[in-house]
Amino acid sequence: MKRHKLITVVALITLLSSVPVFFNKQPQLVLASKKNGNAKKTKLSDSQIIKNLGVKKVANLTNDSLTAKYAAIVKGQNYTWENPYIKVNPYENSPLTALMIFHTDEPTKISYRVIGKTANTTISNKVEGYQTDHQVPIVGLYAGYENFVEVTMTSKNNEKETKTFKIKTINLPKWIRNFPIKVTVNDKNKMNIGSNELTVLNRTTKQTFAVDADGQVRWYYLRWNEHIFEQLSNGRLLLFNKIKSGDEKYNMLVETDYLGRVYRQFSFDKTLGGSYAGTAGLSLVHHDVAEMPNGNWLLTVDDGSKYVEDTIAELDPKTGKIVKVIDFKKFFPESMYKNNKIKANDNTSSGLGLMDWLHINSIYYDPKTDNILLSARNQDIIWSMNYRTNKLNWIFTSKPAKEWPSSFRKYLLKPTKGTKYTGGQHGLYILKESGNKLDILLYDNNIAVTNGDKKQSGKYSAAIEYQIDTKKKTIKQVWSYGEKLGKSNFTEVIGYAQRLANGNTLIDFGFKNKGKESNIIEVDAHGNQVFNLTISNSAKDMTYVYRAYRMKFYPDNYIFDATK
Image 1 (cartoon, rainbow, N blue to C red):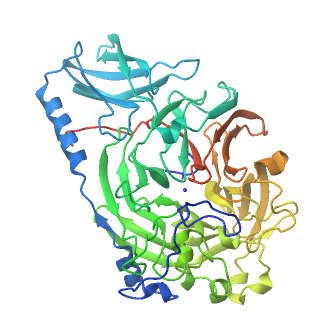
Image 2 (cartoon, helix red, strand yellow):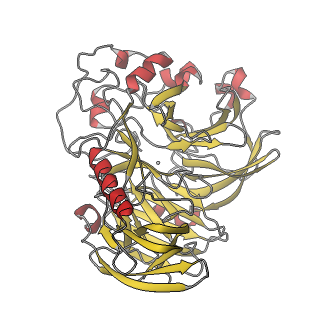
């Protein structure tokens, strides 16, 4: 997903070292006997890291049998416009969706509208092209409700016929219905909602779901998901689920779609090749993913050493192989991790004595330049480097130049007057670039973890747009929102900002009131609120909103075809 158009998110080991994270009390876990002893090591070879990740392509037999069933219905041509086949929750993962299948003698194209309960909440979509065998993916249904869905058939002569179908759905699951949503502002004429856009509430754990401008749930994914929710260039979704529902950790990377059909899924070795054998293991893809033009995925991962969340890996989904890793212990000065005392913060990793010196929480790939932009919370640092050459482009941090080796100093950006240093920031990506000018957007938690602005730390959190002159190595702050909200919207951890197509900005104050609430605000360019939603959370169960996205359900290039 292109971050400046939409997207894309913290694992169980990712949260703030100085902020309590709530877990059920468990016996202390200690380092077990290991096959390779990597968890005591500092640096590992690339081949050892790849081996530790243990990526495997995993079949989904239930999904495959359902696809075969729907393909047979399509080919059988027994259902007609007058009597179509309709299956709610066709893949048992997405209960507020339906699949409609029917045959027509003449080629026609299909569009539909899920009728909203109030103004500007109707979801409209179309299936591209004229066909005789129709497969219509319907999304945006209300839960526990008899939905009215208007389906329109248009011939090549532009003759139209519309039928209304009633589709009934089940109630919401407890991990959604038990958390009240309150919308205090929804100026629908000024919001960026189009004809089919919803606000995705991508939580740290439990079910990811999406709401309309009224805060009504219109889509959710039944499998528990952690942090990763990326819209891919093929119109599908990339999520990070549990391998088994009873597992403590999340380690299944899943390419799915809005109906819940699984196209590809990959498991990771939660013990990292035996480095953490005898424990509950780790969730390896911990914060973010980025899609590359070649279709490969860049992942923020752990490597199996005593240091966590300081490595990225490139996965080729066609082969299921890791083709490149970058361990940032080999990139930054040794003193940055050897002198850092921040421990990884969950029961398992703390019991293992793991260290979280860097804490990469965002990765963005720029197809124009082959550069990647990264954010690391525990160093209060963002930087750009060329992915192919590993050569630095620039670094933005309040860490004084004198504390950097001389070879790094030429890459340090100089802030103009009034430009704020970030602290514990999240969600870095490019808005636009022209010549030497680069505009970026991020969410500044504004907490001084290692190098941040200690005078401002904790006073507020904000979405900030910066402009970088990559030639002069300067940076200036050109827009922000959040400072006037003050401490009430300060979030020690997590958060996201998304620039929308109409120029508005959607901001996720995800850990408001120490995680008891998540506050999603959409503002225009002048800082006027046009949407304000608050959801109550269980901080203990980590149901707070890691990132919020405004997304099309579904994009124009999404195609569902059970026969392929």
